[in-house]
Amino acid sequence: MPPRNKHFRRHEPFQHDKTLTLERAEGPVGWFNPTRAHFLYPVRSRLKDGAETGHTSDESPHESHQNIASQPEATQPAKTVKFLWRSRDNRKGRHALLVRRPAPGEESHFVTPRCTSDPSEVLKNVVRTFTYFPIWDISWLVAFIFTWGSVVWVLNGFFAWLPLEAPSTEFHNEILYGGGITAFIGAIVFFETGSILLIFEAVNADNTGCFGWAVEQLIDEQHGGKPKLHLTASRHNCRHHHQNRHNFVGKGANILTKSFGLEEEKSVQKRQWQWFPSWHDLRTHYIYELGFLAGVAQLFGATVFGVSGITALPGINNHLTHQYALNGAYWIPQVIGGSGFIASSILYLLETQQKWYIPALKILGWHIAFWNLIGAIGFTLCGALGMAYGNSGAQYQASLSTFWGSWAFLIGSYLQLYESLDKHPVEEEKV
Image 1 (cartoon, rainbow, N blue to C red):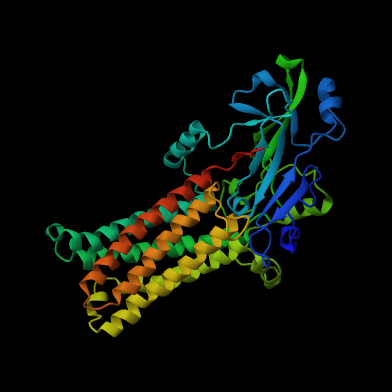
Image 2 (image 1 turned 180 degrees about the vertical axis):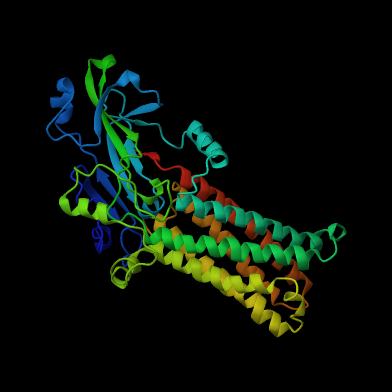
């Protein structure tokens, strides 16, 4: 196994948690930290010793005991359960389980929620995107801001492209005022704000690892009273900042800590919100984190792109009469900013992949990065084609690139909003 698949340079998730055992870690690029790791939740002797008494000496503080018939949620049996730590999920406050269903005739030791790819679970989370607004959750706030920013850019795409496609629909100064004002709002208010929050999200990720599940011992009366371990989503066992409903810049949530070592418990108690990483953390940890570097590239792109958002305003754009002035103040910042978005999207794509050349089609985060990459290409093409002064075809394609690029950003942003509300994904491992 290559070195990149074995070692975290500084923070190894769950290194002090005695209930989880690292099976393997892996990442797409050798120089960076692993971006995913599998942790086994072992079937320990409690299944035998605790079946009658409901208690064992090595019981985790996250465990309780219930009758299996009393569980109201939709559940499925599982032969094995792995906790799938991913760097992106960790930033977003997500806790993924990887379960293997028992073959016919095999005994199952676990009971877990049904897979989140189940149509009913998908529909439930889609409804939540329109009805649930956790403003204290920075990951939700990032996705919400980018989604509305993308809506503004879609409007901008209509203002820029529709008059060229259907001149009869154009109203007076549509491109100057409609296009210019929406470009300013989309670039400055939404893109820049969302990009800054992405950095805050990255530097406040829980690097020690967060399990986020409660484990209950159940007695299955239908199968001879055999005990099973039921894993259920638990806010009380999560210490991400996303659980702090008072504000998203305070302490993480309070959780039970007696299952951790003294060093880990002190780490939990001392953890505070930080606006900027220390220089030591930056050079020993964050510089090796693909997600942090992607956020930096996104912020750089948004900042440079913001120049074109300002110069798009009426009163500025219509006074850039010379082509070299228009190129320097408006089109070139779009190209540079869009290139930053492309670099960011590629890094986010890589972060979700096991190998740098194999797309992670089954991971939602990959599709988010993919659609953002398409949007970034569209915005970059808009700037590049816009410099072709006097070429009507190039001007048409520049406006069209903004149009389809905006829709791609909207798709990626909505998927990110969906992702931010799915805090406990359950994935099925194929045999």
